[in-house]
Length: 240
Ligand code: 6PG
Image 1 (cartoon, rainbow, N blue to C red):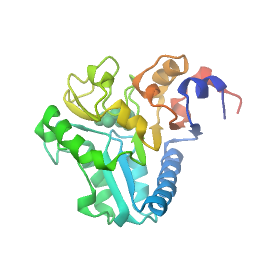
Image 2 (cartoon, rainbow, N blue to C red; image 1 turned 90 degrees about the horizontal axis):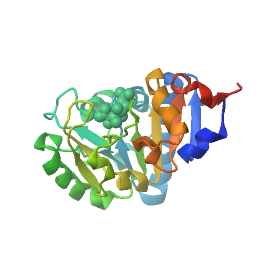
Image 3 (tube, helix red, strand yellow; image 1 turned 180 degrees about the vertical axis):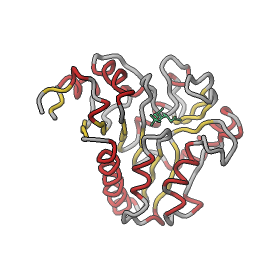
């Protein structure tokens, strides 16, 4: 399936990969993570990844359970977190723990949840201190919402324009309203930025980005996009 140059151009994508379906997308991203982890560990002795929330990455996380990684050298952060009590099933870290981290030997001290239960401001300040020595991250995994948000950086929200390493988010249109997110500079500074975007619900936002509308997801420069066919806006696809 050939992607027209526009899509690559507008997204200033480092790579734009279209997968047959969500399962093959998940498998491809899981393999990318394994490859990049081995590279980071060999070059720097550690692999630092910030995880995406939402539902799309779940299958990728499940596949990672059984893949060969030197888990002792893996450090896990989060791209964003919802301000819910610790352990709440609606939290992004709950999903990642259940789908993946509870099943592999990453040392507990290497998993760095965002203390979002403290409230957005306090959690953002605390996480910024914890995160600083780990920057730049090797990978930030990212989803994209139907409005083109990524992490918890939403269109038109003041947090999206802030230059802080970690930002407090209020009035998020996707519940809960209070969140904590890595700031745009932190996301962009990662060595690799990998999007997982699947389902026809994302078609409209991708179409807007392809037409040059700078939604938050489009402001992640030189990202590696993994998209399934269902999410591709029709006008983008040319040929087979
Ligand atoms: C969240 C995520 C958010 C998510 C997108 C896509 O808290 O929901 O951080 O950025 O990645 O909204 O979500 P889906 O993968 O569920 O479509």
